[in-house]
Image (tube, rainbow, N blue to C red):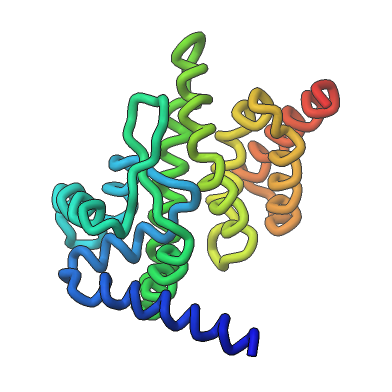
Length: 220
């Protein structure tokens, strides 16, 4: 009886989501589905980078995103930072991820999410000092769940190992200065084990590992 009640509750939740999802336009469904690759929230700029597909007008994503917000399929989160951030409740995210998978676009969305993160991390990594560097670290802190999701995918999904190593190299100072040196060391070790062939990227990742590991031991 208990299992039946749980199943009925899940059916009810899905029916409610269906009721909100079915009337959406094709563009709204596209953006809603692709937003499911974010973990822990996103900014509107991130949504534009990740949700615009081949042949789609990037400018349209903002208006489609606004429509989803007005329909309560996504929500704005309270933050003290300068950029507005948004999130999707987990039942909605799971539903959207299923739709994305069924559409055959899941891997493409994962790729866009990884490409955005690499670009985002790279923009602050190169030559940032003082307050600029602190701002970069603060912004990356907001994306910590997205970073973890991307690093997990890089070792679980086919074709993402090199992307994970690249992202890991860019994040070494973030991991150290945020007190997550052990986390960074773990990800780099796992990905290096999966990519044993000599390459420039592997050499960079080994240097990053040697940077993270000693400082992690000193900082505890």
